[in-house]
Image 1: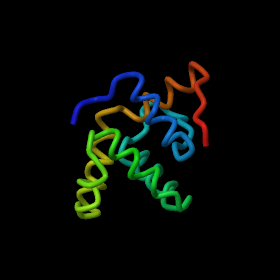
Image 2: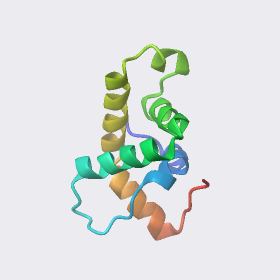
Image 3: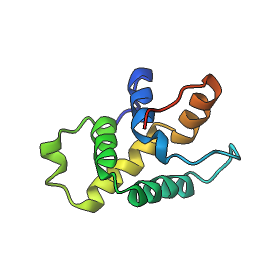
Length: 102
């Protein structure tokens, strides 16, 4: 998996922005942060956003995702958020005033 281009990263932020918690400390534990994102998606009951984010970050088609185990999909999601530095993306979007559309 490769990091997304800026336009794709902004597309990712549009998908996940509603689930990304505020960043109070730049040195936040990335795994804890990602767990909060996953928890927020789970609570929202909008699981399509989770799958859309996985497909975007991994450049994977729906046909491939639907035959994966839930653990494989979660691994793609976590890897994608790490590779695309989700905390930095959140800070960048906040700094430039880029808002997601929920």
